[in-house]
Amino acid sequence: MTPESHSLTDRDPADDAPVPPPGCPAHPLGPGGVRRLYGPEAEDLGALYEKLRAEHGAVAPVLIHDDVPMWVVLGHSENLHMVRSPSQFTRDSRTWELLRSGRVKPDHPLTPHFAWQPICSYAEGDEHLRLRGAVTGAMSTIDYRGLRRYINRATQSLVNRFCDEGRADLVGQFADHLPMAVMCEVLGMADEYNDRIVHAARDMLKGTETAIASNQYIVDALTRLTTRRRTQPEEDFTTHLVNHPARLTDDEIREHLRLILIAAYEATANLIANVLRVILTDPRFRAQLNGGQMTVPEAVEQSLWDEPPFSGILGYFAKQDTELGGQRIRKGDGLLFGIAPGNLDPRVRPDVSASMQGNRSHLAFGGGPHECPGQDIGRAIADTGIDALLMRLPDIRLDCAEEELRWTASIASRHLAELPVRFEPRPPQDVTQRPALRPLPAQRPGWLITTDGPKTTEPAAGWPLPPESAARSTPTASAGPSQPGREPHRRPGLWQRVLRWWRGE
Image (cartoon, rainbow, N blue to C red; front, side, top):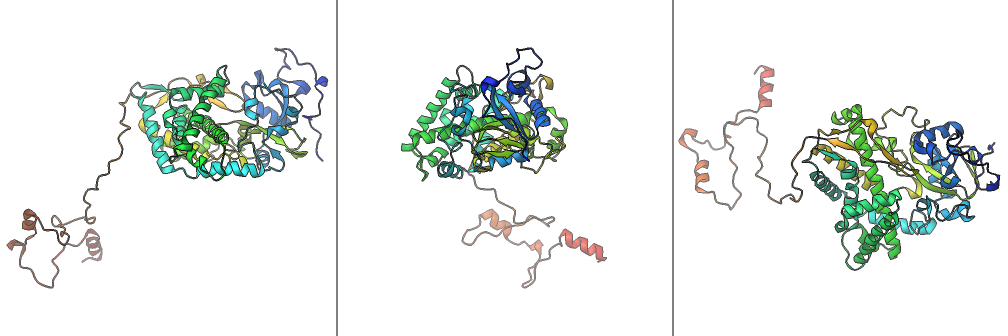
């Protein structure tokens, strides 16, 4: 039997109980005794999710900003069911009943997270296939071997900025910069990469007073790129997106470029910072890495389980009355895709300290029709960048107590503010020199364990020997007379001598 549950669409706001004043023990609870995902109690969202799991199970009622009711999906299988069931759940917020009725205002603080846009992330059916097909088609043209070479050069360039100082902030000076440098190269706007575009992206994600201006700065750069590639095509992602048979408009191209740039930037910056933090603070983790028991890609996958770059995605919306995790979900209800709590579902991970090596069933990149199309790029940036950094600075160590590390957190993500480190100063490396196309040195004709003297190689037909070479190749009297039809005596090789000794010969 389906249990009765909180109704998110039928409740009359006039029936809500008064909100307790700040400082009251009941303050973390909102109208109807529902917990808030913002405010004092939500400073530690991980602990709050576990409280909700204990109280409600795999799906729990919550309140987001302005006390807007919503469901948060905490179970691993329930999250997968939601994202893989487009017939029941959609990402199109225009179906959200509270938005349609006006209870969610246009100036809601989380509007940038759920506002509908003409991009594949919010589209369905044939329109989704058209837009998503263009994105995945352009993604398929990326040369990952060349991409990894560029990531390595970009890593060395960033390390050159601070390697001679012996100390650095690996968030502000490395993790925040590497993804942006690489994505600008991938999109075909390498000339736009600088400190300003990194600051603009970070500022926009923080939602500061200048976030709108920062967003406009990035939009302007992508508009210039789109216009340029219409008339000056090159071998880059944007050109392939422009030329795709789906025939995207300039607005569609720009908005998809913005989605890819910002999503890849934020996710990969968080991923790099999280992996480096664990390497620097967990001796067992670093010992496994140094001892060859774990590779950098495996360390990245472990981090995607333990601390995914996006902790939640707002949101999914019910297209019909249904049931999820024992809760009755009404048509028009909103749901939060709980990536972080889903990864910690005790039904999937009864022991969260156990290694998840070889297991890629985490929720970090979503699933279903809206699964992240750029996850291979994010993995490549993190794998190659972290490996190159550790090779360059093998003695790197944390420059503060682990307890002093601080994060900025929201419903969507948890971003490490700083990661101060120390290391022995090193001189910068030349990252402009490319491999020279020189012929290989002459190779030995074979692996010879023992010889009676230097072995000569016969010249190719038609090539005369130089005088000194001809003299060396002429037999001398001490070599003895040659006997036609008889091979010159050769000393047996090592293996033959061992066999003779073994046989008593």
